[in-house]
Amino acid sequence: MKKNTVKKLITAIGVSALMLASLTGCGSTEEAAAETTEVVEETVAEDAATEVAEAEETVAEETTEETAENTDLSGTITMAGSTSMEKFANALAESFMAKYPGVTVTAEFTGSSAGVESVLAGSVDIGNSSRNLKDEEVANGAVENIVAIDGIAVVTDAANTVTNLTKDQLISIYTGEIKNWSELGGEDLAIVVVGREAGSGTRGAFEEILGIEDACAYANELDSTGAVMAKVASTPGAIGYVSLDVLDDTVIALTLDDVEPSAETIKSGEYFLSRPFVMATNGEIAEQSEAVQALFDYLQSDEGKELVASVGLIVVD
Amino acid sequence: MKGASMTREKRKIVNVEFIAQTVFTVCAFFAVMAVVSITLYMIWNGTPAIFQVGIKEILFSSTWKPTAEDPSFGILYVILTSIVGTVMAILIGVPIGLLTAVFLAEVAPKKLVAIVKPAVELLAGIPSVIYGLLGLMILNPLMYKLEQFLFKGSETHQFTGGANLISAVIVLAVMILPTVINISESAMRAVSPQLKAASLALGASHMQTIFKVIIPAAKSGIISAVVLGVGRAIGEAMAISLVSGSSVNAPLPFNSVRFLTTAIVSEMGYASGLHRQVLFTIGLVLFVFIMIINIALSKLLKKGENAND
Image (cartoon, rainbow over all chains, first blue to last red; front, top):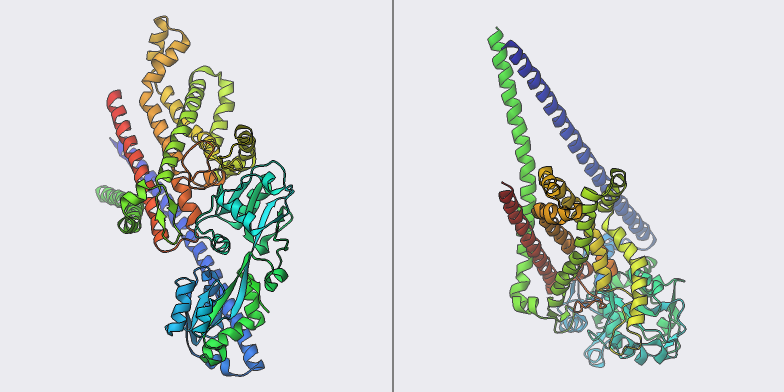
């Protein structure tokens, strides 16, 4: 009887000790987790703080350099238009608002034509269009302000002997009419058509410029530029398209209509696989509100040019 | 005095019991919360597109053009690919896995088991992206050679560079091996030794005993191994997104195909509006598939238990 109680006591103590141990164990892991999250938050906060500080510094510098107006600038800028310009427009809005805290920039993505329509109707300040303006749009008072250029390179694996394609050949390849490089003067090798997934801006631009929206017969739809590069580099006979800024030695960038893809040929308009990013205004920029003028000035500045390059676009001079 | 201290001890024990119970309940609640919130979230996000596009259009149309001027969101080929791919992976993986399990449980000498078993367990621990990378670097080029050989001069075949259904199936078959092997092996080891002894005593050979006695006796465990393998195969995304080519096509062996999982992965990045909602619907379809598999599994296990009793 006594032995039993002693035994029970011992087990009870043992169990409670275990429980305590496990509880403290629990507690410490939780605390550790909490600490890590705190650390993460702190670093995030710090990053944000430094960014803000930097932004403030640049603002401060420029205000001292130029006028004191910048910080006083207030108002709203509304944009609507091209979905392809979403990444660019959002980046622009964000950095512009960081520089001019008094200005609110909102952007909607309704499509190029709808954007130009809205700016002509006066419902927005800027109409984003990822194509040149049409004649009737210009006739109605829209002004074409090209802020950046989107360029796409067509690449093949490094062993491919075909180095030039015409626009029609490129279209035939991507719609599945031409299936072998021998039809294009190359070796007898099947063409493996590589592209991006639906919704990708690069795919949208590529198909739009060639006029083959949703008519492409892809053998591979990969979900990143890097994946396209890797697939094309490692597959004999593959063809793919990527933004101009990621080209390297693992692939050959084809000349199109005998024009090399480069920032120069794109700016001069010789290389056809490119499209302008237009921010259309109703009337000249000088007639716009101060905030809108400041936005275009910002795009002309070094900071603005950096921003354009940072989203993979070509800067216009 | 002694009595009083005893009651204090008892109270302490009761307290500990209470605290422990609370901790366990909270922990259990976490898992339940996760399941409930995921279910609600999937239904909440997956159903709007069904009403907007129409369930018939989504499930039974084979045209997937989510970003076209007049978009169509048919995922029939995607669903079929998931089903065909999983079935083929099971057809390849299960026989190999089952026979490996027989080898481990019955045939192999102890020393060999000591090598093979850890190897199989290691296979289970390899991250899926590694399977995918190996498939991309080794399997795809091999498949491309085979493709060039088989379809030489073909006018209609679209060359995929080796990224096709077969590559995905092979990767999936290897990935389900450890699940099938481990579970069916322990099922076979759990078969009562008397059964085996009785069979041998009746004059049956070792192989006869394995196929006529041990495997039938371990049936419910083997079936659950297969069902878990199906679950793993149908839910895998990373590995097959690297090797399958990801174009929406009918699930033919040398076609570039897209599975339910890879359909979500590959387009979530830039999808917006209705397109995005349809991707959630695909998630819901996948979720329903996996729920069906899980329910089937628990039914089978229950049946097995009853049979064993």
